[in-house]
Image 1: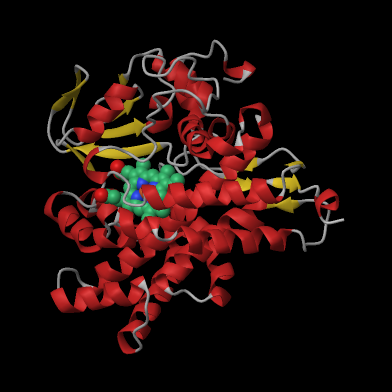
Image 2: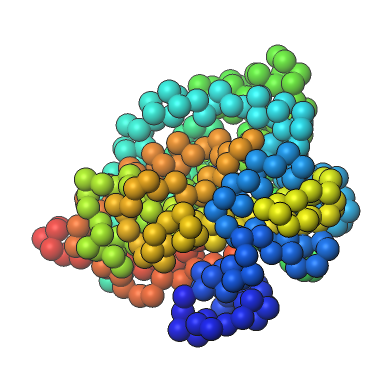
Length: 407
Ligand code: HEM
């Protein structure tokens, strides 16, 4: 909690949460909201879920649905390219549509397949870490120079996206993520819409190319599977490819950059032999996905609080991860806490399909970078993007102290 947020009341916290300052420092505001209880009803149509058990329960509640095409038709968001695409993917589908879409691509993220990717990820991480030493200037931005390059190189390798196209795609991917924020004015979707048009066009062209010129990549395998089974439409195939591109790149990059930042600001807590538990604590303490949205499909109760059909339910994962009923001294960063089971990859039917890939990328990314530049330090105050739902650093300037290493 910042000093400024001490003693702040719940209504003041709510008013501040969606301001630039609130998005930068949301944790004290979640604490203030929690004073009202683990589930807070803010009128008939809006509910905040803040406690750990309450959030896990909400994500397992069959009466709570993800915001699918029907929900986005009501808000008018379906008219926008961002949501035209997102409403064709599993993350924003319910019932049999969700099962069908998840069933179609689950094999691509099978644990055995993913664990076999480690040498490829390691080779890419090493090459990118070495490249940093060749850059001009006193400091480097690790979001631009490392975390986003690594996760796009990995996704690019899996889906056959040429390295020459990857750099231009990175900012476009980040542009699409504000669509997940609470939208108060549909014009806020403009940048995301143009980014989405680029990504849909790019992946549709790639899929069409692989139909004619098959290769050994996931794009080819997904095109073949869709054509052979007819299980999903071409639009759903392209939307799925776009989703794997965005999900495969943005959150893992945010996790890697966030983890490097924690390693530099909490050096006493960082042990190279304990990177996996360090990453779990980063995921708990400052998760890339802070909030998930659900809509009540029927009247129901959450933790005894009545929720009306049609109400929007904000499941605050980041607040749940700091619930004192679940974590001792939740506001303290402690990588050795055990057990440590944050809700950062979700729970239940929509549990993250890429959790294992994200963890491997982050483990290899952090190990390689800190191993190559053990004396690295922060060069300026890290800066977050102006987003609450998809939280991540916009820049992470570090001094690699390369003169000591590359003398
Ligand atoms: C640190 C990295 C990541 C974080 C924090 C994260 C977080 C999440 C969360 C919280 C959900 C649940 C959404 C909900 O319940 O509404 C989710 C779902 C999902 N994630 Fe991830 N994710 C990460 C990386 C990835 C990666 C690398 C991929 C794949 C390339 C991926 C693909 C997906 C998919 C497909 C779903 C939807 C699953 C479903 O609807 O059944 N994610 N993720």
